[in-house]
Length: 255
Length: 259
Image (cartoon, rainbow over all chains, first blue to last red; front, side):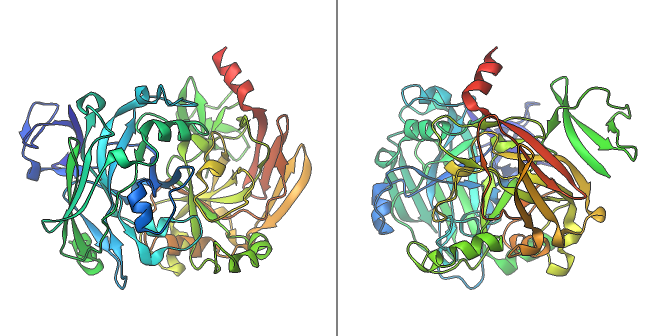
């Protein structure tokens, strides 16, 4: 089943999503995809992985790490499906990152990899944008690069674990204005889902709703205001997003 | 108003500190029992690394070398996740398999309303109040990669006991004292922050919106207070409060919870 959070006529609803991307409210009312505002589908701590695909590590001229390279995001950076993301003025390189996101289903501490999948509730998709101009060598990648307002679209919904036969054999693809720019497969994860749950739960308690964005494969490129960016994880979801300039975004807020 | 959060019958409840020093529950009743304090905030807790001159001066030579190559130009931020946040009096778990953990006495700045792209001159208008934070960490031996493993362990961010109204506090020169077993181990001052409270709010809010209930840990000094199981650590800021927590082996806490 697909689960989403949407806003409709000012109210927030937890809904189920149908195959045509219409949503069914708890009252039974059905609304089309474009009628609702899609919100981030889950509440919790967001972990993200850097350099977790070997091909992407080569692209960035890094050796794949010997230990997962995790960083954190705050709720302020998250947006939903069909939302806009702001490209800051006067930067040279802002790129998308298509990622499979694992959602934790129950409290996890010191979980071994053999049991790790028991702690997964389901999956969603995120686009973990980065503005590379702002990289510095301190707690890299830092929040100025990875935690900007509007720069982590997530959703459109999350799917139950049972609906994804093998999360380690899913194609990831990114299109910009319809052109395929990024393609990879979760089989190439350096640290797979059980390894990430074992690693993180080995030093901290994970809670239901916590999310692990598992990293992105090669194929990064710059995006500009006006671009439509679609990230898709096979069998999980297809997340649409549009890039806007700072001026366009500020104007939209004052309307 | 000085406000806090406590646990009553497994529910988080708001309390206020009255002029007579007594605590009053959110339903107006006085509190009779010894309170079980919760962290007084419920939003995102942001830390600012390398924001105290004592720490930056100790590292300035290293900043010129690999992997850093140059000193930081913008605030270096991290997040203390929900599992780290505990109240006054709750035990800090000393992790199994870890040799050293250290206290990090700091001023906590509680955001009072949505804060986005604010100017330096207005930044303090967005502060609800101030609290005391102990930003516990494994030793900070590298600042190159995000310090999740060093800083996000369960119970590694005592906050409280309460939030004191911003109108009562001038944040520019507060002395912060850290005691281990009542022995003074560390004294620092917010006067030595690289970026002061207003500047942090102004700079952070340029690229990320702060919400009511979010907290900014203004900066820890060069750490000197090691913590061991059995210790009691306290961080004290005049006019705000004294945040005290015992340190207990993680395995002992787990056994107590299982009983």
